[in-house]
Image (cartoon, rainbow, N blue to C red; front, side, top):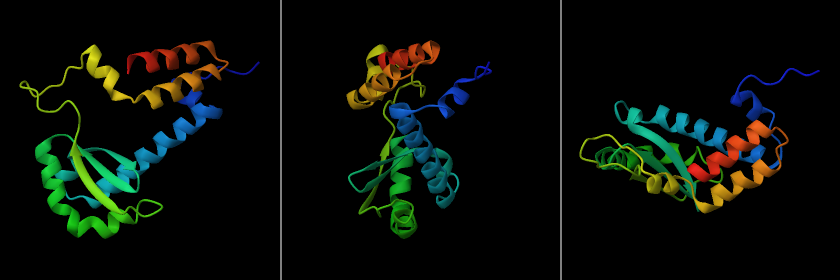
Length: 150
């Protein structure tokens, strides 16, 4: 009998179908984020928390509006190298602050309403579709919970 995977990471590595595509997209984004951080100078690189690709635009997601502004001033010098990271090449590169920044305490405590904003309805539906295709009941429940809570 096959040994059951001991972690969610191992289960995701065995994923198929919609879930496999979702895992591949997440891996691509993580790799792209690491490449972008390598091009950014410190301390700016440490405040780049995500990257998004949208309609041939590469968006650097920064921890706060202040860091987004600092990164934006660096873009003219970095643009040629940043464009080369994306295939097909990005036509535009921009920055934005992470959602949920600007709270008085400096710490973001997500409310139920905020959590529902984290994933688009399209992303939640992709997760639900992936969950329906999973035979492992524990993993299926975890994905269904993720689609509901995020």
